[in-house]
Image (cartoon, rainbow over all chains, first blue to last red; front, side):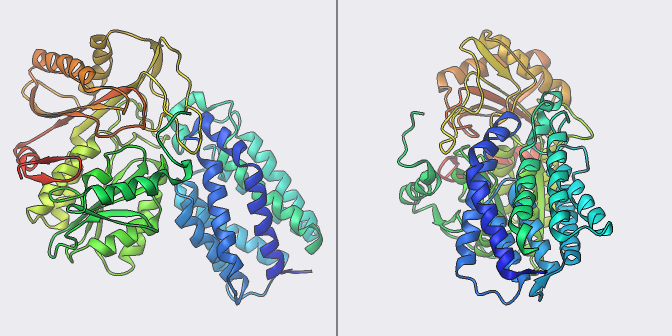
Length: 212
Length: 333
C-alpha cells in the first residue's frame, strides 16, 4: 500500500516527537565534539515546522516536504539548518504533485535528498557526518527492494543500516564541521548529525510499519 | 548558571530590543527575521556590506552597524549561525543598487547559510560577493578539516571594508580588498575559563582552576593544547609565536594589532597583554601602526584574550582612519 499525505504527516509528527525526546541527548553528543546546540536547534526547527504544517492545506506531498524544508532552513541555524533544510526540500522536489508514494518513489526521493545533503555540505563517507548514517540507509533500502522485500521490511533494514552507520562514526576522526577542529580528539564520540539522521529514518520505519 | 537574563529563550530578541532603544540615531532592528541595519539605509549607489554570525560575540557584529562599517548584521541564536532568510531580508532592505558584499567567518554553518542566502539574492538578479575570513592559526592547516576558523580579523575587515564602501569602491574592488585583508590577518586566542550558553545552562567545556587552553575558538572549540596557567608574558609568547611565524610577519612590516577580551577579561589585563605584544613586535622590527584594545569579538563571559595582527598597507591604514560611527566603534566624527 502506498503512503498517503496523512502517512507522511504522521512520520513528520513522529520525527518532531522523537527529536523532542532526544533533545538533551543530541545536545550532549554535540557538546563533546561540537558546540552543544544540535538537539536544541533540531527541536526548535521541527516544532516550528509542525506549527506551519498544522495550518497548511497542502495540494500534494511535495508541498508538505517543501514547507518542512523551508521552515528548517529558517529556524534551525548552524550547519543542521541548511543540511536538513536541503534534505526535505529535495524530498519535496521529487514528490511534487504526488498524492501517494510507492516504495520506488521513496527510493528516488531519499536518493535526491541525500545527494542534496552531500552537495551542500561537501562531506564524503567516513568524514563523521550525517552522510555516514544516510548513505548506508539508502543502499540498504534499495537492496531490500531489489530482493523483493516489502516496503515495511525495506524501511526496517534501512533504519538498521542507519543505526550501524551512526555507531560506525564513533571511532572516526571528524573531517567536516566544528568537530574537525578536534582532529584525533574527535575519535571515540558518536556524531550528533549521524544520530539525528538515524532517529528520522528509525521514525519512518516505525510510523510506516503498518501504513506501508 | 548565574546570568543577568530574564528567559534563556529570549536572550537574543531582548538584547536586540535594548539595542534599538539605546541607539535609535544609528540603527534600526527588524524582527523575524532578525537583523540590525543602518538607520539611514538604503544608501543609494553604495555597496551594501553585510555580515552576521551567532550571537554571544558582542559587540561583533551588531555593534558594528552604522556609518563607515556595516550596513546590516544578522545575529543568529547564541553561537549558532544565522539563517538564509535573515541575510536575504537584510540585503533586500539595505542594498543601494551597487551590489552586496557578505563578510563570512569560516564555520561550516555560517558558510552554508550565507551561500544559500547568496543563491537566493543572485536568483533575484542582485550582485553578491563574499569574503571569507579564516585567520585562526590555532587550527593547523589540514587538507581535510573545515580549515581555519574566522576570528579577530573579521573585526578589522568590517572596519576597513565598511570605510572603502563609504568611499565609493565598487563591488569587485571591495571584494578584492576584502580578500587581501583576509590573507594578511592572523589571530590566536586563549581561555582562562569556559563560558555558558544561556539555553544550555552548563559550561561549554571544563577547565581546571589552574589550567588554561591555548588556541581556544570563539565558541569554546578546543585549541592546540591545555596546560597549567602561566604568567601573562609567557602566555603572550605562546600566542605570538604561531601568529608571527605563520604569515610570516617580517621586520619592516606595519600592522594593525587588536588585543581582544573574550568577554570576562578586564581592560587592565589587556594592557598587560599589549605591553608584551608591543615588546615582541619592537624586538622583531614590526611596527604597530594602529591598535585596538578591548572587548570586540567575545565569547559570552569567557575569560581570556585573543591577539590579531593584520599586515597593513597604506590603503588599509587610510581606510582604518576613515571616520566610523557605530554603537561599538566610533572615531573621527
